[in-house]
Length: 195
Image 1 (cartoon, rainbow, N blue to C red):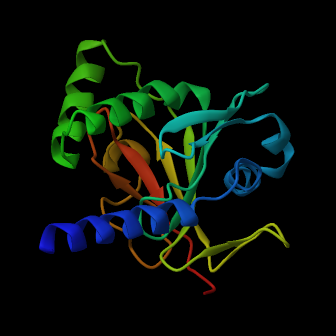
Image 2 (image 1 turned 180 degrees about the vertical axis):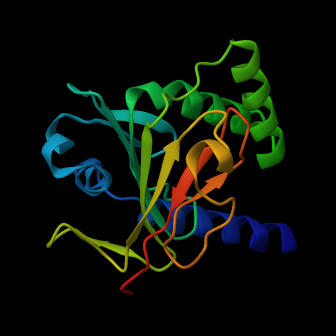
């Protein structure tokens, strides 16, 4: 009886996860909200199929890539970045699929950028993250309710000395250098939320 009950719980959970997944059209419409308005129509869109697999939802015609929200992750998050960041992102996805943890992924990509086997993001390439722990996409208004932006500006090998920025924020919303001196160094900017 316990085995049967456990099986039903698993089936109900799987149905709940699938029910949370947006249609392909809504994934595209919500994902491009992370991109500048002028490039949304031509951005390459990654998202998730009905099986939860990471797939291309739409081929791009410009230099931008966006990713739809992962229905299996808590909260809501869509991202945008230029194509030169995709090898870095793809390698992270590959290592995650192999079961590597965050620390291992960070170190392996760092080592691979250092030895030249992984293309590093271009200096100044920007990752825009439109997210919210309780944010909800409204398909009728095409808005992310309760969402806010965070920006990652890739600056390989940058330090506080080379940028003039601190290694922790001076105050809410202030820019700072994360991972200074490493290939994965970047400037973090999290504007204060209105929510």
